[in-house]
Image 1: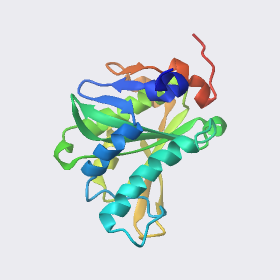
Image 2 (image 1 turned 60 degrees about the vertical axis):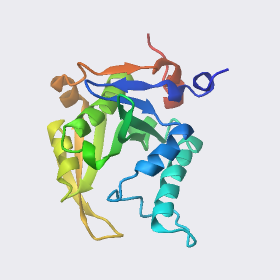
Image 3 (image 1 turned 60 degrees about the horizontal axis):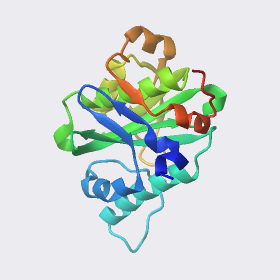
Image 4 (image 1 turned 45 degrees about the vertical axis):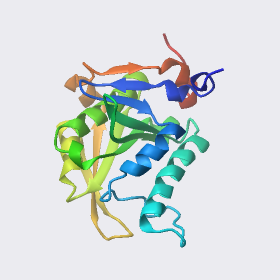
Length: 215
């Protein structure tokens, strides 16, 4: 029995005009550890190890984040990481999360791109792909996101996709201001951004989101 048969989440695949997003597997981790950008801000609350240098600790955060996502998965609280490729080249990672999924049907997202892949509109394609999955196939009601106020790239993607600013908060570990944004389902539907995005492999995975096949 193949991996996708016993863990159907790994069969979900998203495609845009230029990108191919497949759910991260353990086999992807060594490549991602090598490509991890130096300027990527890691989870400040993640475990760090006194005997490791900064680079090794960053790799540990990435790997444990993947294992935690799979090991702690439930229909109420889930996190799905995608590896973003163009052809055979890995360009980055896109996460889609449902931290209180069955209660509010709201998704969150985060991502990173290699420096050479930035500034080309790929961040908008990546997020559009996971929003198509969330709204069109999983029945999400809304999507939220956040970024520090000087992260123009992330906030620019949000604005381009129709997110509205809601409020600001302060990051405890750094004191930086964090801008929160929200996209309602009606706005997504009106944008017609799903056209041109292909979403495959969702049906076998629906029970893992607490959903039933309606087709």
